[in-house]
Image (cartoon, rainbow, N blue to C red; front, side, top):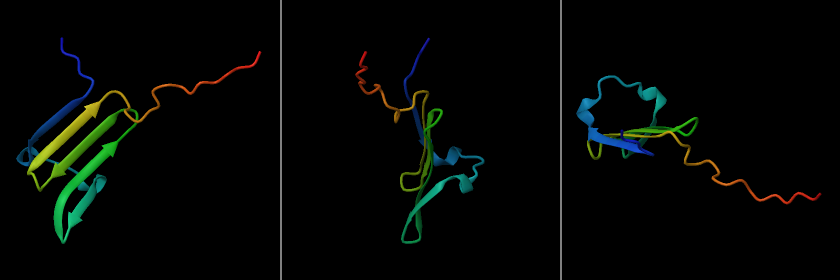
Length: 79
């Protein structure tokens, strides 16, 4: 069985069938669309990027939240 901490798929933009671009952030330059990006951090990290510059679709997923604090701060308890 394979286990992954992080999974990133990069494929051709041609494989997009149905997408609601209203959920995405648009990045453009001089009236040209560079990419659309959707990103969430909770309860898991998910990135979907439609990159017109590179003609690719990027899907990135991790079950862990990479932005969470890894260690609790040290607290000294007086007794």
